[in-house]
Length: 308
Image (cartoon, rainbow, N blue to C red; front, side):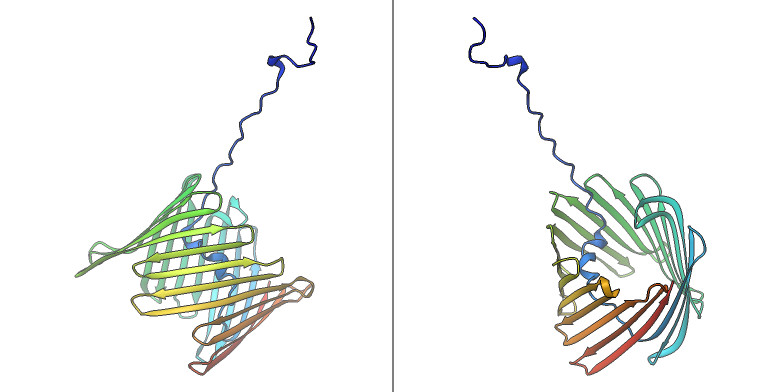
């Protein structure tokens, strides 16, 4: 007899392939845990500033900045940046050399190198005229789902002083990142260490981050309401200074008007806002900012023009 029930033979039945789980993403750098929230808040502005950017080639660009303020003498800054050929992402190009020098001869310089596919190195130097103030060396290794970083600040073998910072971040799930920071400092007659634990949870439209340690706590919440509105909330507590600060910021984008508006309110009775306006087809951006501290009765405002 044939197969009267019309059933297919066992060998011809299709088998479901096992579901492949997507690998966990790299958590990024420890310094970028609160970046989304901090980008919502406006930057402080005071006085009048003129910035002229000039792209000399696909690798080299310079910027001239003139700043006049009632709080100090007028200043000039020359900013130069070189970017190499190895581009890992839209914001990461190696090697990168960045330098900024003011009219007094003080220099801030930074060098970024890609030593291997997963290993990065960074060196930072800061001088005040002819005197070195800061020299810092970073090494960062980025695995498939973790990031480990070691930083040496102002190492002095003769004076037996050093600041060492170790960071580690691990992606536990696609949304949860856990890690920590260990800061060790040593100088003649003094030695100590501070441990901080960190966690970050990323949802579709919001990100919550928390750092807790013996030195204090830092919590932030970022929410993207839509393409035009973003808000951020920050809480910072410092156990050594016995001080806590709560801040609320918002970011409003008006694409049809080529405008960006940022504002903030904090627990120190400070309010501030910055309005940026692009002037197409001219490569000009205007910015106007004002900040008021009600508690100390201080007010300052600023205006800037950026060309290029």
